[in-house]
Amino acid sequence: MQISVQKKRQFLLGMVISLLCLGGMFWVIKPAEIAEAIQQSDPRYLLGTAVYLIIYLFLRAVRWRYLLGNHIPQAKLLHIQNVGQMLTQLLPFRLGDVARAVLVGQQPGLSVPQGITTMVVERLLDMLLMVFLLPLALLQIDALPTWLRQAALFSGMATVGLIVFLMVMANKRPLAHKLLAWLASKLAWLQSKKLHKQLDSLLDGLHAFTRWRTALTLLGLSVLTWLPVVLAYNAALQAVHLPPSLLTATFIMIAGAFAVAAPSSPGQIGVFHMGIIAAMTTLGQPAEAAASLAVLYHALNFLLMVLTGIVGLNSIQISFPRLFQSLGFQWRSTPPELTDPIS
Image (cartoon, rainbow, N blue to C red; front, top):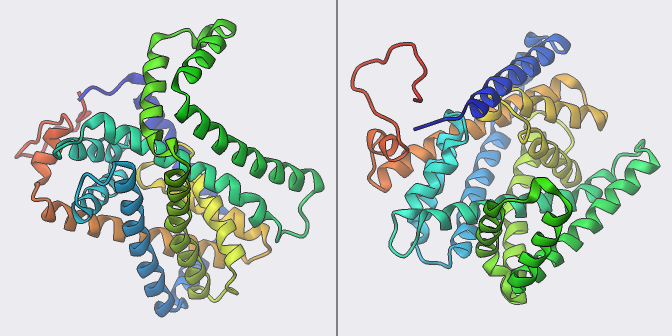
């Protein structure tokens, strides 16, 4: 598998950012204080957090199956998704997404491009939902500057407009290409034939938006998919003895989602923790409790992703060697030399 120099640089940048975030967290908050807060956590609510995250994985697979036209059994798609989520936690370069696309492309009636396209749409929907919910979550911050509150409300309205625009483009493909050609005539960096192919791929993924009923169903599934995550954060708040609030949980979820978009190590270590701590301290919560919540939630999420991924590998009957070979790696039976394993 060939990895570009740019990708390798992004990986190194991500590792540096993760280390800086971890260093900053432990500089401000003593590890002993975090450990003490974790020891005092309530395991009952941690169990509830785990249950909600499992529900989230199931609903996410339901939405993905809908995007794929329901051409694959739900259980098999759930296992494929979980394998990809596991690899995203363990490996760099978002190879989990590659694995998901490859495994889906091996199913009858489906292809790798379909898998990639639907995952692009997944991320787009998630991003739109986070931006749409942001103004609602910010309403609870009393000290929020007026200009920032207005900007948040504008972003929410802009998100609604973008959703409508995507629905129009999905139904008017020639118009979408004409619009791209017009933009390319004004902007030199858009003058590329590949962009039209990429636009076609995006529009293929937006096929569900060609009808109002299917579009609304997809948007409803997106809301339903993220609801258990809000409940998971709400349970995690109770686990570290902080007052539960769905608005607080929503704000924390959005902060975590934006934080992990930054370059980081596999598993989003460091950036996730700093995002959660920043969000909670903005709400006036103690930094130690915020750090304990971030550590507990991240560890629980990581463990669940790995365990469900292992179950998925066993269920779809594919071994690690075969999986890595499908991604372009050469699996070795003996320990490799300390060199870059990606050639």
